[in-house]
Length: 109
Image (cartoon, rainbow, N blue to C red; front, side, top):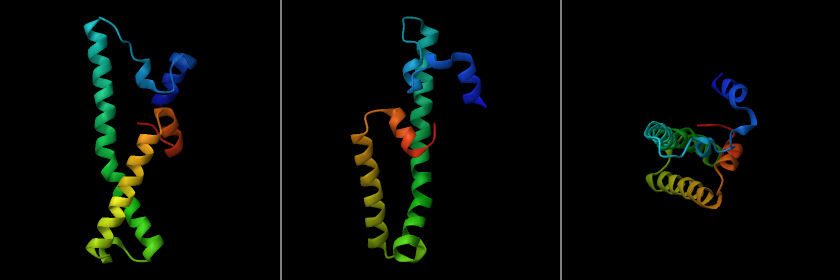
């Protein structure tokens, strides 16, 4: 609903990275609004990442080892978590565009 209303209101004038579409100027109110929106995205991604890792690790453990993650040894659990985090970090460093990253995961923040 929010995306639809934003699309109707602003159309194609909005950049694919919506954070770039916020006003940048000397006006204090617009600067505070833009900074607040950017901080909300940072908090959303920062808080969401651990929540995404938990079910992803459970699914990966079931696919590779055919056991729930609680039955894995600590070394196996830690190495799988490190590999998932390392892969995520590498992709984040390689992909320079927020709209490309959101297109890959199929979601928005």
